[in-house]
Length: 434
Image 1 (spheres, one colour):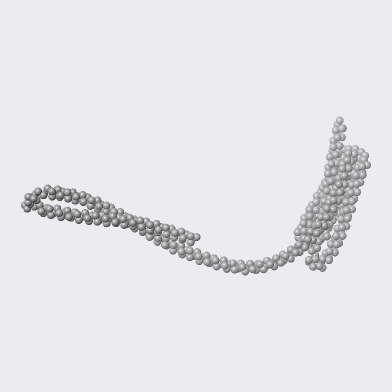
Image 2 (image 1 turned 45 degrees about the vertical axis):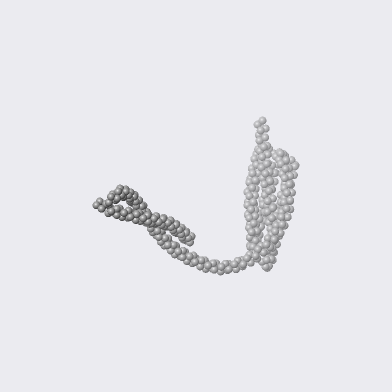
């Protein structure tokens, strides 16, 4: 920036010098022109002075020659002519004097203008000289400042070079550390790739099992819907065996509670197995985190099932008590009894499935212990094998979802039954009023 400023000052100084030179040249031309005019006027004045001297000399000669005592008759005759000539010469002399005065006045004006112009030029030259001195001092100051800036810049450059050398050495050491980290990362990536491949195979297997279970779930759902439809048709005539229905429902609830407790114990065992798996497979943190989230979700679902079950049970008991107090007992059709038997069979089937799952969990725990004992003597690469518990974990998740769905269906059934009973009660009240 100092260089640019110095360059601008030098350019401005050059422009000022050029302008002063041009102005000085024009003034010099004007002075030369005035000097030439002065010389011409002086030359003309000299000529006029010579003429005036000649005329004065002639007049003096004529005066000396016109003495009255020495004049002749011829001279007397020539006297008027000489007088006329003298008068003419005097008039010419007067005109010449006027011209000389005019020329002298012009010459004086020209000299005054020349002196004023010279004074103005001198003042301008002094101003330009002063400005030139100031610019010279400013130039010297800027040069010194520029040298200081260049010295500072050189010191900064030297410092940056030294820091760059240090950074190069640090970069070299960091590159070596990075190569070591890359090798370690490559090894970890290979192990993770192997684990990912095994997890992919396991997921494919679980997907097939899940599809089979979903088809089975759909079939059971269809059966349950058929049973619910049949129960809905049987609600219209189901009034006399409500006490027995209540007992059967309570038995079913007890069986469901036992099934829920067994499922909870299976969940606790599964949680213990997952915790052991988390301790064993430290390299598969992401999968363990997912399993933990699934387990927490299952726990929340189980807690929700417990609360929903208690609520439904209390609701069913209150509805049945109200129904007992308000309506008379009527005989139940044979079809309603069959539907309740079908529901009982389905509950027994669920209990048997839960027992099978418990047996499978015990077998898996036994195989898990054997697998842990075998892997304890193997190297780290052979330990990273697919976990057989993930499939059973998926089975338990699907079974839990199915139980939750059954719970929801029972809730809807009880609500519909309560609405139908309320409708029958209102109709009975209306008939009594009529």
